[in-house]
Structure formats: structure tokens, C-alpha cells
Length: 363
Image 1 (cartoon, rainbow, N blue to C red):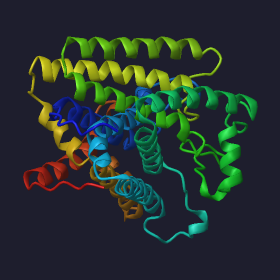
Image 2: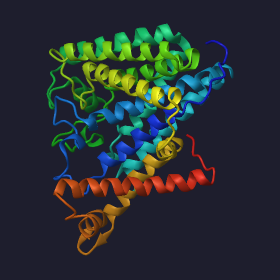
Image 3: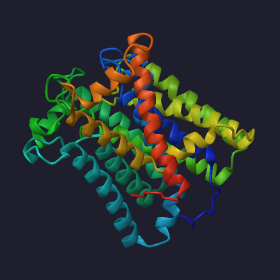
Image 4: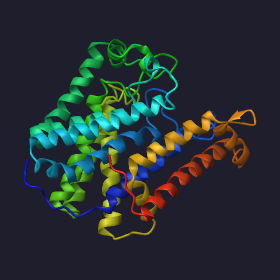
């Protein structure tokens, strides 16, 4: 790795992280899952919605941050690098696992092992090691091999259905059905192990975008490169969709290219508005969420679990809160969204209090 580059802090990257967390909370906490706008739900199988864009954007933002911290890791020597990456990756994975086990009353033998934070931890660790040992060229070759190899594995060892896909077969063999998500009617985990390969491409793509900002600044040349790369990814994704459908739950290669392309476009827009045009009004809202990203996400998930464990008026606390304070405000979809936004603002308030006191939780 090259010597550490002293890079400026990009407010646009903080805003991107904060925007992603805000959307994550909103799509995860509707007042009523049966009455949510279509774009605030995942596509049933093949297809793409706004909600399908959220998680890969989070991984892209993880890669952005990696471009700033990886040179510092390298300066500490190989042993320190491996320890730092292993510790962070392991802690994120463990937090995700404990979140599913919480409040620690169900048997471990039936606790889900894969998950959102678990995928973040694995993808961060794999991307960091690849870029540290193989450099940018190795990272690029990995992206090509992972996307094509994943397509070959999914085609050669199964099909693209819920029951017959290769990722599910691998998870059943390695982990067993009791450790997988069962919300689809059968044991199938959308954050399964095989999907870690293409998902890591989202992180590495974010690293390349962040590295471009670090080394070339936010001038016209950088924005053109980001937009051009994004356009190429989107065109390739739409072409590939004909034979390997865009599918979030399978994390298909076409889905990776589409989300990376959209993220490159979004990042270009934010950089242009915030860094080039100097527009700062309203950015603090997302900065608050972007400064304590993992903590606020964990807070939102734990709050949902605790509310659902409470019993109020014959209902769980989550349903009671929605029915008492939000149901009936406009259409059922609007009421459901209002609850989700209010829930996100509650989490934001905690983040704001932490920011006011200079409290930042890093993993």
C-alpha cells in the first residue's frame, strides 16, 4: 500500500451515510406492513424498488470510509492491520448475531446466524483484506471474478427460484434450516453466505469512489468519472437482467451493478451540491445520523424488539403505539409511513443528543 494520504473530510459522504440510515429505519418500521407504499417494500422477487437500494448503498458507504482509513491501517504493519480488520469485522458480525438472539431467551440452536450486520462485517473484512494485500488492481479483478463467478455458481448449481437457488442450498448444508431466516415461508436467508461475494463488490466500488475523491479532489474530472462509471454499470445491469434477473434477495450480479451505478450517480449529485456548490442547508440532519451510523441502526432495531415484547391494551407495544397515535391520519399507507418517519425522528433525536455531547460510538 502507498503512504497515507492526508485527505479532507467530505461532508457529502457523511450525508450519504445519514440518508441511508434514515431510509433504512423508515423502510424497516412501517406502522402496518399490510399498508405500506410499494416503494417502501422489497420487490417480491425479481425487480427493484427504493427499498432494495438502501442496503447496498450502506455497503457502498462502508467502502467510501475504507478509502480514508485503509492507508492508516497499512502504516501500522501487517500484524496490526490484520488485528484491526479482524476485530472490527468480528464485532460487527457479533453485534448482528446478538441482535437476533436478544433478549437471549430463545435457544442458540434456533437463532438466525446470517443477517444485515453480519453481511456488513463479512463484506468489510473481505474487502479490506483484498485491497490491503492485492491493491486496487487486485480489488478490480476480484469484482469481475465475483460477479461472473457468482452467476456461474447460481446457474450451474441451482436456479433463480426461492427454493432452488444455490445460495440456499449452501446455507442449508453449512448452517442448517434453524439458523436461517424463515420469513419467506421456507428456510431461506437473503443475507446468506454465498451472496457475500457479490455484496463485497458494493463495498469495493465504494472504496474506488472514495479513493477517487481522496486522490483527485471533487473537481469536474472526478464528477465526470463517477457519472460515466455509474452509467456504464447501469447499462450493463439492464443488459444482464435479461439472463440474470435483478434480484435483491439473491443479490444477483445485475443487482450489484445497478445499485453501484445508482450510488455513483447519487454520490456525484451530493458532491456537486455540497462540495462544489457549497449548499449546506439541511445537511446537519443527515450528519447527525452519519456520525453514529451503526449505533443508531442498532438502537432502531432494539427499540422495535422491546416494543414488540411489551403488551399494552391487549396488543404488543409497537402495534398499540401505531393504532393509538398514528392510525387514521390519512390513508392507511400514509398513516403507516407517518409512524415510520416519527420512529426515525426519535432515533435521530438520540443521535442529536449524542452529537451535542460529542459522543461518537465507533466499532
